[in-house]
Image (cartoon, rainbow, N blue to C red):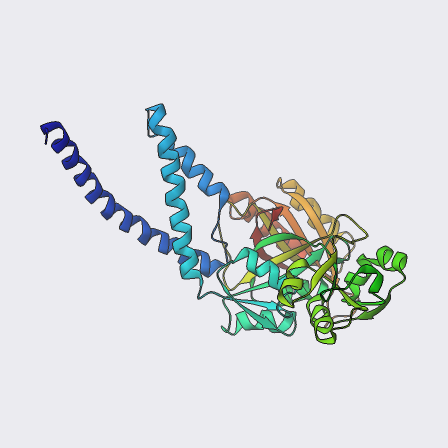
Length: 362
């Protein structure tokens, strides 16, 4: 064996030994990152963070040829880190409302792929499961592009103790489902949630189907599977069809091409991450003329762009309302603190309900 080869192997062995120690050190830090994400209800994949790390670290390698391989190495290392986090995530308990195959079940699975998804009967029960420690995180719908806000969710966030640590957009695609062998011509009656029936009104009318309402789309699919009747169809997702052994007879039957539901991720603590660049405020204004206008003016004066404003009646006080507001920017800054302080002068209640990354699709 030549001296050159022997020297090269010694260098490689030494580097491998150092890399093994550094790998363990890095993965211990990855575990800490996961524990933070679990506590704050954050997803494992942070694409912007990974891109920033690749850009920063690749600049450390001056050899342009080696830099290409180093980028591949970093990407593979990040993939391994995610796999380790997903393995730890298998114990994460995520509460959702509905049954297996419901859109909340699908959303929870896409945000937290390896988690234990736990079904609850309604939004309140899913929310309380986190408050009581039965679950770590709740995934609850907050708004639909077709039907508007989900008032019950907003009420829970306003009156409760949990924080929004993410809002994710799930495109809802409704499909006509039936048992094996069923065709469009065979279907006489369709069942689904009233909102889904409304979204597919034109399609239903064109085909002359009669309708039956169901508590949610997944239960509708379950009912069709149990009936085993070719004339009975369900309107639900393709994922639901696979769960209940149905087939998609016709896909994408929504009246509106745009049908997106926004799901909020709720946990006991409020996350503070650069990726969460938007803030949710909830407030009640004093019962005086111009109070709401003053509050909106204060938000704008401090340089925050308001992207959403909704009002909801306060259940314990007739003809009084609270307001749900989304703004661009983080309020954990000097200007944010000044804005909140000034808002408190014209508002009875000012609550930072959470933070999220805008327009995150799942």
